[in-house]
Image (tube, rainbow, N blue to C red; front, side, top):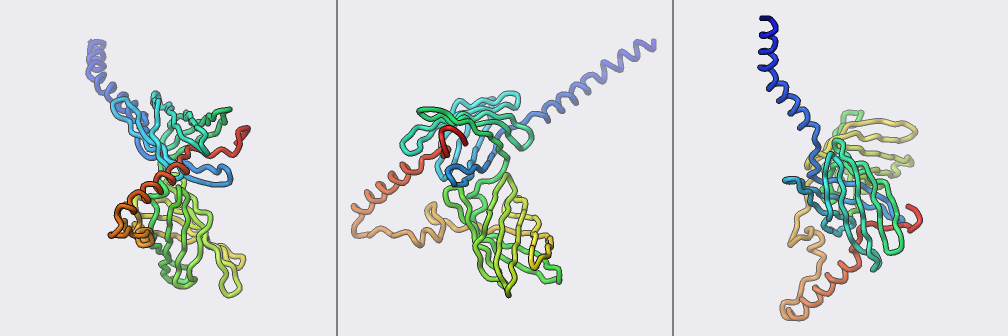
Length: 292
């Protein structure tokens, strides 16, 4: 009798156990959809690469961007958290083919890239993280922090992107305007350094923050007169206004076509666009063919 009751109990709970196991397995699956970024220095230039993936109905599609140029990926596959795809481009009129392979784990891809050129190939390590594009942080960041003496400071960080590379200006009511150095964007982490002299002393501030949409929170480490202090800071971003796909500042600087000479304005603009795109179709910049 006892044996029959035990068997009946096992039959009753089996569907529940199966459901729980199935849910756990589903939770372990990684969806590669989203934006993945990494930074590499090649030929003396450091630039961000951006991979945007979409995985639907077992099909993996996406695009690859570097230095402002975007190309579609091909031969994309995703199986058991293993990802692979190809991307083509040109550099100095030479065809470049990139073969990407990696394994997804959480919010990181670890693998390799094989850069194939006409007369050889170059293997590179590849680590990509879920994150944001350099263009996603462009604008004015209004920061806020409280100094050790209880004073509230509200400096600003103005960021611009040029071919995937970030440059910036730090604006402070107390310390003036200074160029920002060592701007790093890795995944959702943004850091930068500002350094200046004031009253015969050198001040160095290193900001390290985590991005959450249009907001940032993190830590500022200040070194001055041999002393180091850590402060918490927060900030919000104001995106630059755009006019016909250009930032407001660039739109103001751009020459306006002569209304009385429309026939000459269009061909000149078309020619300029073709020339620019021909010079900047780059997938990966190779430092050398023999090594990274």
